[in-house]
Length: 142
Image: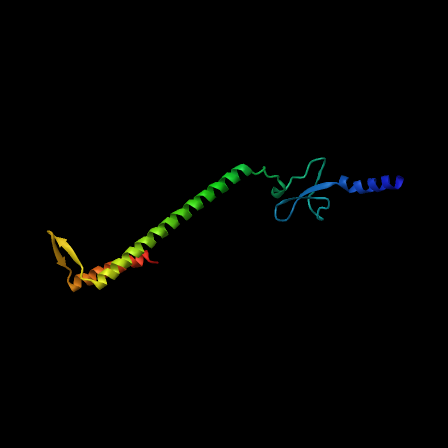
């Protein structure tokens, strides 16, 4: 029993060691048990050593706020995905319609109505209309 008590007393001895304060060659304040030789030391008496900024405890994180932000990000992402899906579906429908128009324009003589009469397109007008339709196809049929 005495041996255990003696061991505990010897183990606690370093805890009561003297702490010194000094300024190093870079001008920073240092603390420790063994100052370098030639340093202007100041013994610390019962004062607590300052803690480094990394040892400063952080305030507890607000988990509920972070969870709410996460849910909001998920909702925004879902809404964006739905918009993109709707845009893709609109493009698909427009693509099919434009391709059908191109096919009809290539196969038939196309016309427009003016004053109740049919006015057929010239070859130049037909080529211009096909170019316009192909431009729409490149926009919608990606």
